[in-house]
Image 1 (cartoon, rainbow over the protein chains, first blue to last red):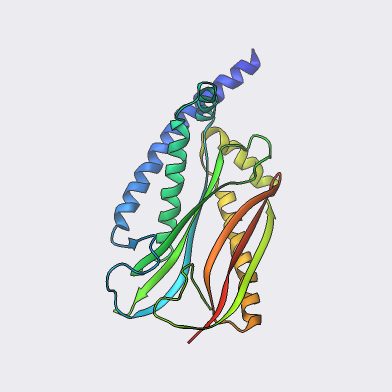
Image 2 (tube, each protein chain N blue to C red):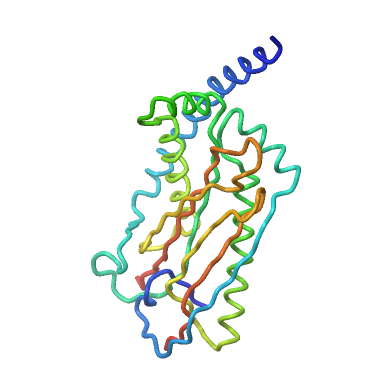
Length: 148
Length: 104
């Protein structure tokens, strides 16, 4: 009975706090993405367009470790029985990727372009108890500063 | 030292190639961070402690790679790649490798 109580508390806490936090996070992501819209970011190996002489280049990176809440973990567990699209994990990965790219951009706000953007996903600290469902996203690229 | 993950340094010419350099580090989390992460696992969201931990680990691996490149007499490292793997429960390995070159 007590166990069921704990489970339900965590379940509800995960649902309410988790979905509120996610909403807030998405709001801040959208805001910041708009702010950095002008910074051209590509996965191509050469700068896009003619940017003239290059003054400086350096490696930039951004990372984020984001965990899924208790509610979503249970839902994903249920989903694993019947198979199919685990949408609760999709938003998790989407959030972390966008956050990682934003951090990369925030580390070089005065760059002209960011080229060769690569995104890597790994599950960190796998194997430790209760630690499943937290992923790390690393975004890295080369920031280019034009002469002008 | 110039570090890029492109095959060349944009706007500069590579004069000499000195071979692959790499740096690695294995990091374990400490208990305090672990407890916080355990709580965060209930409500979801970012595990800030882990983010910082991995950033520090990458800085360290990067430094090791740079000092290796300096020893070879390089002034740039191109085509840098990151790789992360969990070697044991509670520990993560960060490996960074690239090609040391001399640019004009």
